[in-house]
Image (tube, rainbow, N blue to C red; front, top):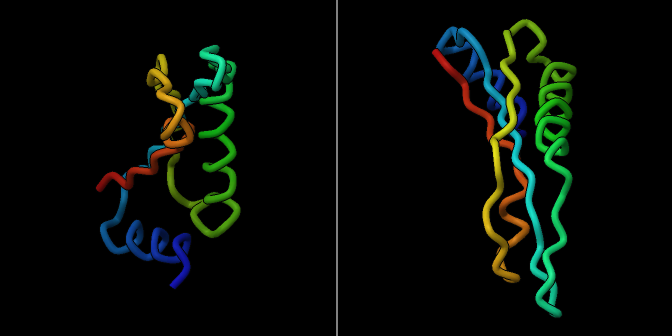
Length: 92
């Protein structure tokens, strides 16, 4: 079953009160030692985009709470991509 469909079934099964989407921005440590950071506003844009995808994919009947994490993780040059994410939480 596709992830969006699983999320829809789960939210309906537990009679979810809301779905929270939290976005975060990241940075990359370049080989010359400089840090290339995303603009902090990208975190809320990322979360909004995910919320819109979920709403148009069958979850439009649920209340969505969209937020952005403040700050960002320090880049290490290896796992920097992991900081650029959105976290979805279904709340009963």
